Image (cartoon, rainbow, N blue to C red; front, side):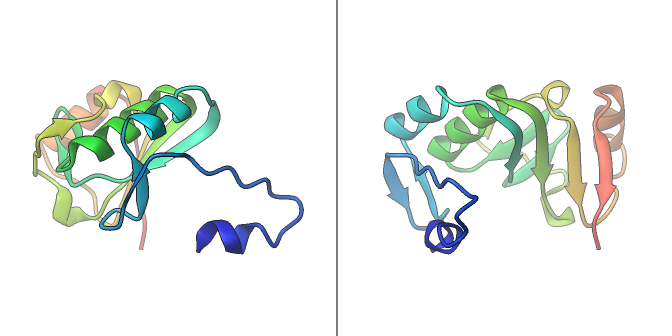
Length: 129
């Protein structure tokens, strides 16, 4: 749906990743998707997270974590988007350390020790309303 909507604008080139469609994430995952993304470079990667822990953002699904890891490695700036319900939760895969994240956008400011980890890694915090 997003690709079809964007394709109506002639100034936007839509590129779709191959792979296995995960309807729960509304995303392409798997080895084909990860390899494809590893060949691209983006100015900015926007990723989500199931959990936001002191070591970094984490995901419940290993395939989604692999996509986020690849996206983060292939970008100039990495921005993690999460709501405060994710703070302090740690799931199966920490997909990137905070030292590789530029910005965390959340609906509230975290408290220590998470805040301490973010400050030590110089992650910019943006509180969205």
